[in-house]
Length: 437
Image (cartoon, rainbow, N blue to C red):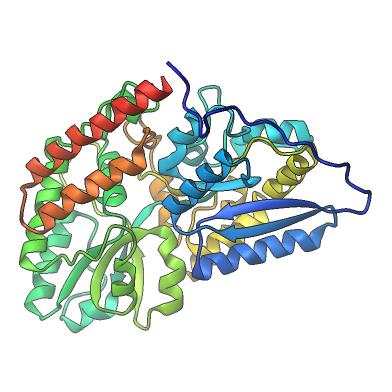
């Protein structure tokens, strides 16, 4: 069988004219940020460019995560790929299987003579982006994990204690009933329903989402997220959708607008939603841990990462690779990562950045901003909780979205929807295995 590649033929390295001593080497960086996150990345790039005179990084937004990955694939096929491509965690298996399309980060750093220690990165982040030998394939950059955002004013207006215990889904259910009785029209909404309500739910309760250690142990994996716990949760959400406790806003983070406007009392979203909530919310709010099911054995275990990493594309000049190494080293520095974490809610990807944030007093001044880190590091990850690495995962998520929407509309039971999603998703996995195996 042929190996999966982005193009029909191997990439040929283009010939470049020698650079003059005074010329700067251009580094193209494609990412998936807009709005406030794009502004913050632009500021990082400007700071790096101003710090030295050898390289000029140009950052370009290519749309959402799926659009950015597709743009990178198309550019590779046309031999016009950027030096650095941001790829969301869902695309990791695809990038790993795309032989000849990328240059592993550990090789980029070694060839450039940059001191690079993968053990400097927090375990749950490092483990997702390394191979079986512990060598880092892509650079973790914007890693996040789901948390619960609470509109404290909505609770107070409903006569509820804003500090009430919301650590379990059973308690959330009871709170939503009381909120609804008090006239709250949107009790709960969510972003990224597959990532939060199925993928992270599974890890947090230490149950498998897929066989073969969620895909880490081989390509011959099968989806298994139609077990009793997952069905129980989707059934409960389906009931909430039917009785008005849960307002479904969309497949990505559309629900964020509802929460930031003060319309919804509870919101499950990425820890990186912090930037938008902190900027826009005109009400009292706080961050809580993601709920779990009381009585479920092994829960809470640990949550899993979302976000994206930076892949170095093949076919660049030696000068470009040295510049890429310098830029990635800059992005991983404790000062840059600590500021990024504090500005956005993304995880501090290194232990040094986490320690620096704590030393600067940020967690004391902003209660709840350390919850994401605690959730990720509360227990040693298990084969069920270290993450999910599947081929065609973006398409599988689309299948899951379609099936879940059938539950929210009352057209399917939770069991029917998850059984169908597993069956349809497994077909995609078999196609990927045949192509990449």
